Length: 262
Image 1: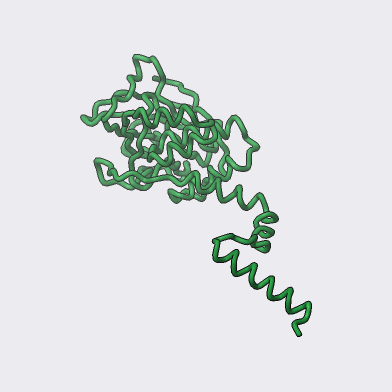
Image 2: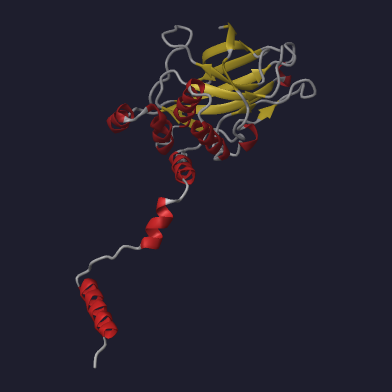
């Protein structure tokens, strides 16, 4: 005689068979529980690291130099600065008046010059800056609406120099950083994406488009406005690590340098 237990087992077996045949998904309680109690911090961290993955564009600098490398003398007096630039020696921008960033290890009273040249080696902008109140990461911006600083032209490549003048009578001893910048057109698609995005999402949009100078500038602006935001600090570290500048990721953001001569 069939027992009550065997009847229940047979009924349960039949129900499972029908459910599987109909494609009904039974709840995976172990998986749901694991996701429900996984730390929120870990999920947020994964999102923030992924969104600042810089996409290196397939372009090369006009000349073969090490990106951001310095040359020159007076190294016993002045620690060599570092340009925030990918190893490709060149960065892209859609800005007419972009900003350049440099890490200054120690203050210096020596004259410091920033020069921008076009593809014909003609100087289009030149200024002297004061670095007596750093160390940290400083920025140099091309002035807007200035006769002394014309806007970058779309499709053109420019070379910049950042020089610490060790000996005014022998400029061959200058400590010099060199790099290039190319201005691209802001496409309607990118403009629309930026317009709809929240400010914190814009650095990742620039990074995905391969626009180095705009990525750095937008992220620095966010960090200056939100100095205690740990997620922005994590983005900044990840961005510098992506170009091999881990050593300066914790350097303070000093801001714009003081111009002493145009």
